[in-house]
Structures are given as C-alpha cells and as structure tokens.
Length: 143
Image (cartoon, rainbow, N blue to C red; front, side, top):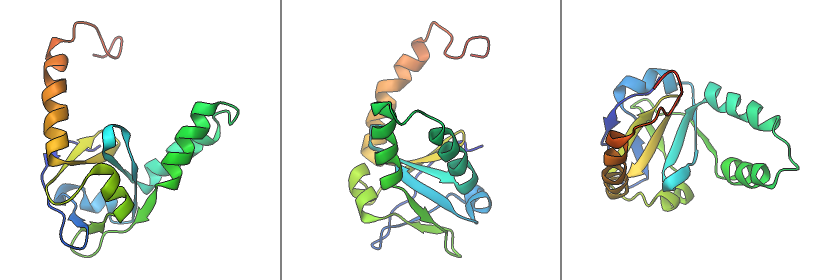
C-alpha cells in the first residue's frame, strides 16, 4: 500500500528519486504510464499485471475500453530503479505531466502518482473542500 506525500525533484537527466519507504517494494521493477488529470501512474510490476489481466477481459467491442487501453499501454514504460533508487521518466511522459523540476509523489493505495508541483497544489486546493464537505458515502458501508 502506498501512502503519503513526497516532494522530490527531477534532475537534468529526467531522473527522480523514489521515496525511500517505497524503494524495496519497487526494486524489482515498475511501470510508469499516463494517468488522469495529467499525472503519471507508477505501478509495481505485479499490480500492473493485475490491471493488464482485468483489461484483457473487458470487451474490445466497447470503444471506451479500446481508447483507454491504447493510451494506457502505448504510453507505458517499464523501469528498474538504479542503485540509488532513481528512475528515469521518459521525455514523452514528462511532457504529458508537465514535469520539469519540482514534483510531488503521492501514495494512492496500489500505485504512486507523480504530479508537477503547481498542478498538484491546484488539484488539492480544488478537492480538499469537496472532500471535507462530502455528505454521502463514497464506498457504501465503508466510508
């Protein structure tokens, strides 16, 4: 499970230090791909395989499934952290998320998300009040 908020910086080669608390879980490899709201999703290999299996059972006759799968898999990049715990984020993914220097890495349960700092700040400012004002259960019987 991935939790918390971290603020690493991209270096000049497009590398990012993974938060130390996640390095062991991601040491064998990970997959980075485009996420919603122009962030990047980072999945451990096992979780990415689970998603792949789930999408493979979805009907290819459904246009939304085809569209989502194409973007999701075409933009995916498998990476292995180096000995210092850095990953290289491909240029196309950096461009999609607007990553230049200051980043935010958030834990999002089964994945990490990488955001450009200002984009995260804007998103969080918009969502925190809505979160605080929720009056219905998001997950019935749980929350």
